[in-house]
Image 1: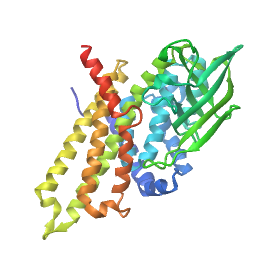
Image 2: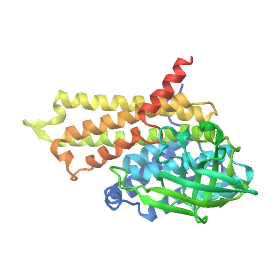
Image 3: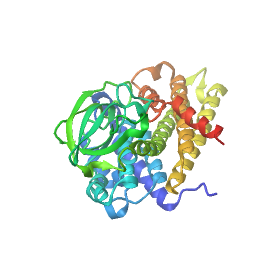
Image 4: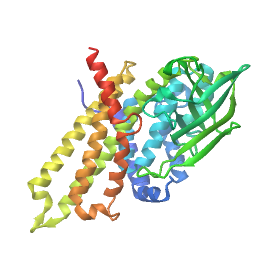
Length: 381
């Protein structure tokens, strides 16, 4: 087993690191304050090929896998978690299901535009009454000749304010129980009846766009169906395996930033005549942060490698997200504690890291849901 990155992965990591440190880190606080990411960032990400990392080369992408995406996301999120989640959702929650479940016509139509960033993707699953219980969605899709008519409301849609293409999960068989009557649809921006609703005011990742998406008699053709009719829930769950790897990578990136900030401050801050890094209490915090991050990173890499090999990774993705998200919050808490009162002000970016870390235990499957996923598979043998 080789734990070293290949030359190709090292190059992609260094490229993402350079972009993050030059373009994102200096503006991350600005994006947080203005609650949006400057458009030129997306243009530069498109030029670097970051929007098409996992899209096959024949459709204009880089043809790389989830491992490469994870490495990139760790670097981007180390600098700006708002930009990181935008990139993660685009690649793992929209590009991935089209690549895995789309028809050749759908791939040819949408993937080239997603690869360049001409269109940015969004994932519409959660509803006011359907969060962890995703099978309880009430958005409907009813046949009208060869078309489908969508009605309903989706909430907490990342990229919702500017996405050009949405994957939407709707109930197509009202008589079927829970997950068995759900289908997935590809709905482009500008489709009559699709509107962007309320923009959420958030604790963290404030620069990312999080909105309601409303569907009022939205008509789409038969070619909008992604995968098979009434079999959209497995599409959603498979997609979330990849999404959880993406959010695990985000958590590692935030944790890395916390560790770097804690090390830097502990060397500069003096108390009782010496740097606080000389005190064992601080050293133990840093040791635990570093060890937990390395363990979580390896779990993320394992899950990503399994997905790249075409193997099922639901348990491994859930384990990676469980450990990575709790580690990110542990590191954020310890980093703030090391900074003391200064960390509680916006003079340092520690308070933003603390706020950004919290969401990693909630979206794309809350920590409690990850434990259920893991336990079921362990108990099933």
